[in-house]
Length: 375
Image (tube, rainbow, N blue to C red; front, side):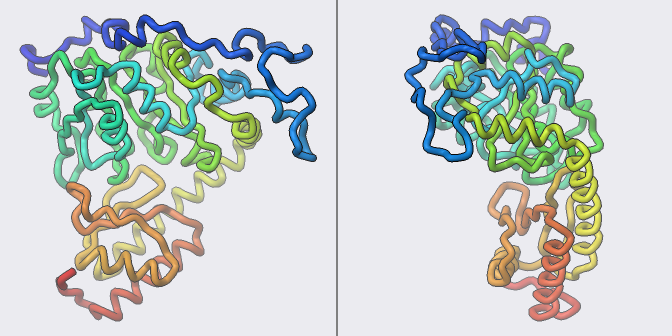
C-alpha cells in the first residue's frame, strides 16, 4: 500500500487505537463476575430468591453467567480456539457496535467498508457519529480494490470491515487480498465470517495468533440454525477480548440462549447433516435457476443463499413471488446489484416450489424469450 498514507502494521499498538474514555474507564463488575461458585446461598444480586413463576424451572430467577464460560468451552473445543480468545454477544450486531465504541472516536475517526455488503457496518457507524468511507467492490466478481483502499487510508482510519463470504453477493473475498489488508493496516480489521461454514475457503480463526489487529465475527445463526437465540461471536487476541468484556453490558447473553446453544453444540452429527443438505440444495437451485429464461445470471455462492440477476424487472418477480407466498430479498436498489434478488436456500420442497413458480412467471409473461419491460 502507499507508503505516504498507510499506517504500517509494524507500528500496530492496540492501546493507541482505543478511545481515551474507554482506556481510562473502570468497568462495571457484576455480582456473578465477583463470585461464580454454584453451591452457595446467593444473596448478593437482588434476585428473587423464591424463584420464577415458571412451572418447569426454578433456575431463571438467577442472573446468567456474564462471561458464558460453559458455552465458550463448547465452542473452544469445536473450533480448536482457546476460550480466552472468544467473545459472545447478543448477535453479531452487538459485536459490531462494541468495536465502534471501543476503537473509533465520534466525529474524528472513520471506518472503511466495501459495498455491496452487510448494512449494519454503516448503520452502526452512523449511530456512533463515525464517518464511513465506502469503496465499492469490483464489478461482476465482487472483490476488493486494493489500490483504492491504499489511497484512502490515513491516520484517522481505525476500522476496516470485510465480509467473506460476502452478503448479499455470496462470494468469497480472495484470501490473499484479505491477508494483504490485515498485514499492512495498523488499525483494526474486522473479518465477518458469518457464512464461513458454507465455504470451501478456510476460516482465519486458526491463524488468529498471527494477526493482533484482526477481529473475526462468526455466529450460531446461520449454519447452526440458532438465529432465534441471538448468539454472535468474536474471535481475537486475548487483549482485544478483554476490552470487549470490559465494555459490554453485564448480562448480554441470556440464560435460555446459553443453555440451548450448549445442547445444540453437542449435536454435531445433525449439524453436519443439515450443512450437507444445504450445500446439495444450493447446487440444485443454481442449476435449476440457470435453466429459466428470465434468469440472466446466478452469481457464484459460498453461502446459504444465491444472488440472482433477472433479465426483466426483478421487482415484478419479487411481487409475484409474494403473491404466491414466497418471500425473497429484493436487492435491486443496492449498488452493483441492479435487478437482483437474494434467495436463501430452503428445504427441497420449498426450493422446488420456488423454481416452479419462477418458471410459471417466466412462461406466463414472457414465453420462451423474455423481453425487457418497464417497471
